[in-house]
Length: 165
Image 1 (cartoon, helix red, strand yellow):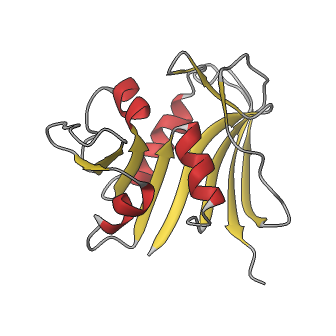
Image 2 (image 1 turned 90 degrees about the vertical axis):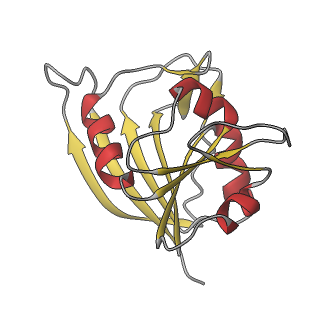
């Protein structure tokens, strides 16, 4: 089982503000859909509520401390570890946010890959992605793109794999 964090982060590691995305980057949304379709996606309750509904053709697992939380069409877990145990017959699991879930998954060493969209701009934010520790993570692929009429900012798709010791 491969566990991948997938996130779009700004140059200053900004993720969002007021429980919402800061930028609109259609190329990132298209790639997110392509990569996660058919798989389990794990997210915190705030991230789920900012999306508002289960995403089509994916199994949504919401992580919350609220033991009575329920959302139709979703699985609910009270920890990341419990969420991972709910996954059946899926070789690729994606953790899609938010900041607290990303931080906890990295600190608990549960993640095999980082799939990052780097937005080449700094933004004012209230949530940030953890600093990527290059002594732990190795960049294995990068695609760079310049802004265009649909995508307002320069961006890169960057894949990291955990270094083996």
